Image (cartoon, rainbow, N blue to C red; front, side, top):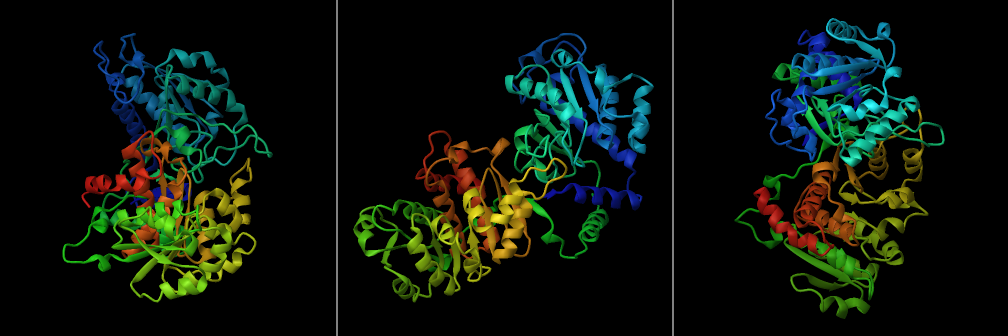
Length: 556
């Protein structure tokens, strides 16, 4: 997994390197500018040519990039901080390659930070800086690149006076018209810690940010690149190395800087990571039998309500649980028996029935919720939790406790995984959901990562908060994000039953002995990969059947 940093964490890493004499702020700014230029030419090779042989515009359907129309032209919009300083470096480097570059400054030059001021002066030796107010929107359509170096990761407020130019850029990106829009670090108007665009007034109206084709960030992605609105505004995100923490000594210094920032040596509880699946952990040994890979029990609802549990059970079996049993009430036994083959069936009528089935010590994980029905959930969840086994609670098993979430939390243990979508999260954690939804023209009350971490601490177990930006946190603060956006977008997952399959994937991994946070994170990654492998036309039944191909591709 790769780190996702907050803006404060990134500043701490930079500050530690500078104070140790490892690098200067000016050198970091130069490297950042070089990284942006490099990323532009890597994304659109045609822009890197200065003769008439432009070739194909790799990575974007912009036909005009292939045409020889004379010198390339860029408009660079610089802001009043170090992000603006990066912009001055990019302007200078493009000018050195023969580009026609126009630079506009939002704010006063005399108020620029010292390093940004140096690069402002370097640019002034070869070009002109015009006030931002002189920038004409009509100029956007006459250049090849517009560089957004207005505001970076430190932004904490809305920018209502920039809304016209933001909208003009969005229109160009949407219609695939000239120019390409490139953001430095993060699109201006996006909170780097939450991914939300800042509303222009206290009621939450008028939120708008720069819409980029390409965002170039440095050292590591920020949370805002993968959460909430961030991915839709950022476009393709490229990470450029600027020379921070390359040596073991430097890496140790960076880690200590984060420890100092948070005042706690357990830094893992403050870092967030991007989810990846591990082929090694998914691989099965050749010297083991079915019970070595766990026995999952999936509880079903009554007659006519068994489909969701069957989907979950199929997912648990495909992901590698050695055995999977459906616990079914008497009225639904014939219905389920007619639908299953590799799955097993057990009669579970009520609390006593579940308690009897759990007399088998080989059952290692349970799933309750998909199609279960809230009355049945209220009866069975306490029995499942009292068994001490790994438990996934989804759907009805969460909503059943809307009126008394603390009653549920009191029974949970650290081997549980809760999988709420937005509505279910609101039912169990109404105060956190309210903070998450509140508009905040200056700063943000809470991010999805903070909300999920708080929920996991309150519940005392792992919480997987669903969405295109799925966040998984456990009770210790360990947290990961899986963003099904950009290169990993999977819009076909918006189909009935997809969440039931995810619950089954998690249950199957828990049955195999995966720790809860790892089971949830791995399942989320595989769930999206199955959808992407199948593509358009996906229905929930397809997801488990795509898993073998996905696992083979991983080398599992």
